[in-house]
Amino acid sequence: MNGDALFTIFPLVSILFYLAPVVFIIWFLIKLLKIQQEKNKILKTISDKLDKLNT
Image 1 (tube, one colour):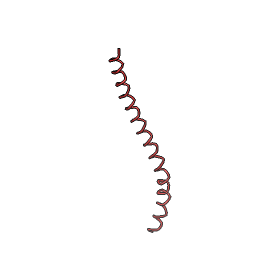
Image 2 (cartoon, rainbow, N blue to C red; image 1 turned 135 degrees about the horizontal axis):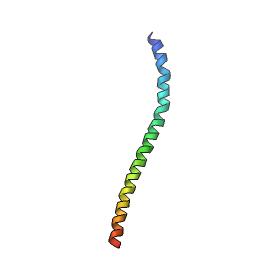
Image 3 (cartoon, rainbow, N blue to C red; image 1 turned 90 degrees about the vertical axis):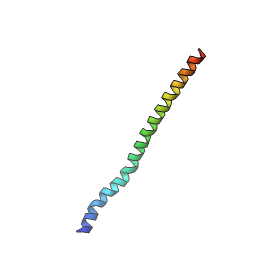
Image 4 (cartoon, helix red, strand yellow; image 1 turned 90 degrees about the horizontal axis):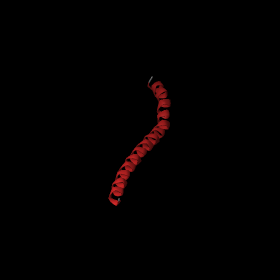
């Protein structure tokens, strides 16, 4: 009985091992894009402030 349960769980575990890197890469890319957008907003405000000083 224990061996049968192991053989039924094994395909699910192998699918998780294939999906885990894909999910991690997608999460990482979304996180990276959000960080880049935040940096762009900060740089935009700095640029606007410098433009006000120059004019």
